[in-house]
Amino acid sequence: MDADEVLLGLARAVVGVSTRAAGELGTVSVVQLRALTVLRQRPDLALAELARGVGGGVSTTSRLVDRLVAAGWVDRRPSPASRRAVSLRLTESGEGLVRRYDALRLAELRAALDGVPPGRRAAVLAALAEFAAGVGLDVVPVPRAPADEGGDPACWLARVCPACGRLADEAPPTRCPACGEELPAD
Figure 1 (cartoon, rainbow, N blue to C red):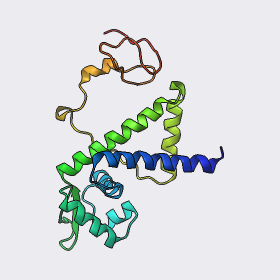
Figure 2: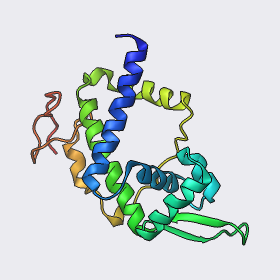
Figure 3: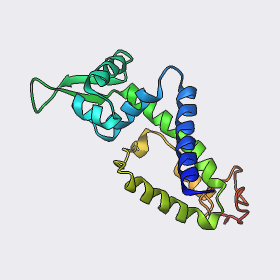
Figure 4: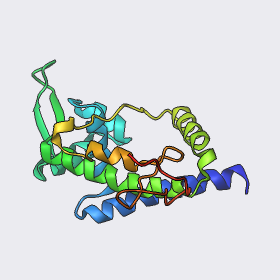
């Protein structure tokens, strides 16, 4: 397989993951989710900045924002920098939608990563990070919910395999379902 086939295969795979996740969420498009994701990474954007972030024109992005506001996912308010500009920010509902979208995408991507031999996963992730930087992706840390707002309980840490990082299905865990590593008893 040559480099072009690999790159096009990767592009198709990533679009497929995003499309399937959007389909599971229901009445939201991949384009709308892209705009919401950009706003999650960079809150309080002006319309022109959001247009650049989604790769669209200002007029098209303005209509997109109208739909996002009507759906209750985006709040449009006067910009603190200029009374003539607006600032765009996710609502709580929009934030929740993007969290669900990210969780669906991550589940599928993690399952794909599980298909990589455990000893090569770190190298694959490092190569993907270099690739993302090479295409100029604005990799901004995604805000995480504080510990008291939900998430997995800390007691699940004993179920994480130290060899490959997969979460064991059984409780209490004895062996990792991915690599077979015996898990320490706590």
